[in-house]
Length: 151
Figure 1 (cartoon, rainbow, N blue to C red):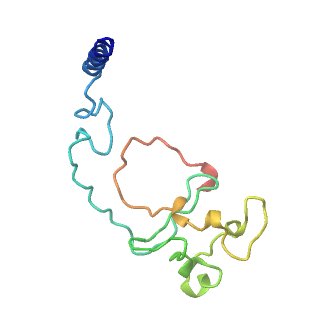
Figure 2 (cartoon, rainbow, N blue to C red):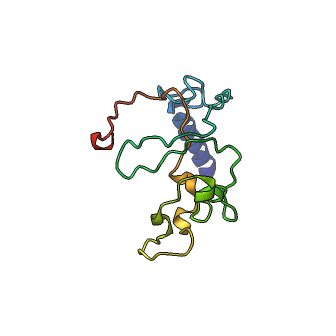
């Protein structure tokens, strides 16, 4: 009998807690996102692909130590632990003949400051820092002002 009363009390408490918890599955909770006001449980339509330049001059940097932006499309580039398509043009070996900027010598250094004969594993995955720039509408208001010395 004690077990039955205990189980009934547990169900009663659980039911009360569930009734007091707001239903977050059908609401954005007032948070704005790229999905707009679309509920999280609703399948949102995919954003259209952005248009990237075919090739072009490098973009200006906006702050010190900013990784250069990629001035061309990289769709379908393979970068994994066996292949890095970026190095086909930007490696020290290929950059001159491809008329592409060489990767920075800092990309050959380990965390301990040792210089390697090949790209450091911590710098091998280019897209962690370097991104293609598209002519896209900002998602949020941007009031950033670039460093004057860079212009």
